[in-house]
Image (tube, rainbow, N blue to C red; front, side, top):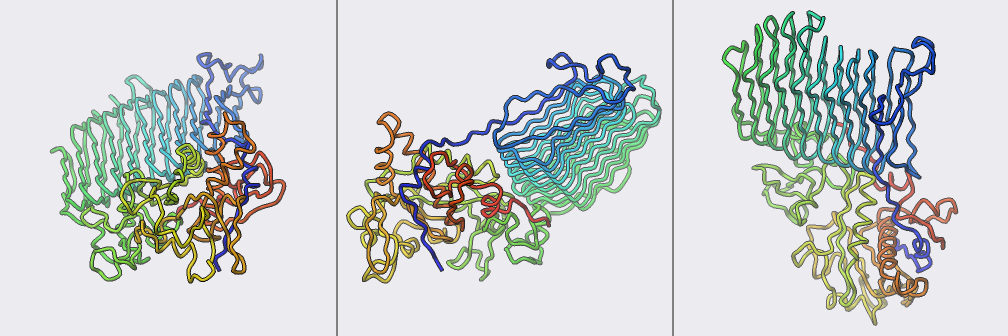
Length: 631
């Protein structure tokens, strides 16, 4: 049963003195040299290096959080090495981890695993000379922006870099470059999923002449990575493993997929004069062009295996003439044309395996929007009973049936790996639109939780948001009151209007919430209309419709604030009431628990410091489970 939730102007008092909590980027910087103002981590205060624990490296925080605590674990025992862990936490904006200038003969391990990051994740490990083993793992992170991992300009005996099982709403860049390796370099990039673009670069790593090892190796494994929309780019360039001895270079690239192109460049690498290079590239697929170049590499023997790599627009393969092994330039093959479609979302199982969505769940990111569009009658045209999806039908790379067809500009296209919430906002003629500063605050708050809030307050066209409503609202409004509920003598109510209104694209059904900004709101109870100047918002619980009473909000602000601060206060109140009512749409209830007054905008009593936020983690997880189903 549909239920209307009402918030009076007393709720607005919860928001009056509360600003939008602004969490600055968290940055962790670790170093062991005076260049960053820290003490030598091996300075044990006069003790010999073998006497138990020694001083930890300095930790430099560029900012702190009031609501996000970051635990630190750094262990350095004698000369044996150190371990830096930045794992298992939630950071609302950017997380940056920088590790540099460790210059002793030691082992160094850096772990950045299992974090939830609202913004970007940057891991930079660089300029660490004379290490024994360097191990860097970045895995299982869920990131709302981009992931960037850079391991560079370090001199080590052994290097192990792993970037695995990360999910990013935008892109991933992994760079291992300009390092000096004595014995072994092992790089694994696997099981990562991103929406926009992935770039993997292994370049300029060398084994300098005169270093003691006779046997040295470089192993690169790039497998099972997926890009939903755009391009996967792989560059393995100008790595030199030895000028003497028997070096071995092994490169395996397989089971990767992309919604557009895959580009691979393996060029200028050397394992000479007595070394071997093995290159295996197989079972990769993309929806446009597959381009593979293996050229200009030098070794005693070069073995190249390039088979079963498919592009919907074909594949181009160029391999140097002295390579040994099968090289096949495959004909075009489109995964979307090959049945079956196990979850019935309009995307074939092979296509979903290629781009990284779940072929067993029609809604991989669990945000209420299906991955694809199910063309139930097979006419390749979106019908009235056929729901748009986040990818739609990609045949011909036109993405028919995508929610992206219903939004402008392009930046509001849905993200198949992260939660999207769409809201259309119209206003009764004479009222103002939702303030830009309110929209900015709301979008920013949801972004902290990897949720993209799309508010259409006038993207363009006559069937979208930002429309002044008048004639088609006459039976729902009287004397500046938007009447919410069954109007006496009428067969319908305002919520029926949501589906019948004049300025509305029916294709937005079940995708968009709908908001009307009115002067005042009246409710209906037992057949009687209650004209209440104190009601500032109302919403279905759960449902799609909500309304804000701008004049009621302004009236309250005028009572509380001096003239100079009223505009800013109105914008803040509009955002707070909007978020409260949208919470009801998503089945959040009011709370009167006194301990919640500093935690959630769903707190109903009159307090002055409720945040523009939902309670963590329970209310946010009720809106979106914060997970992507694994295929």
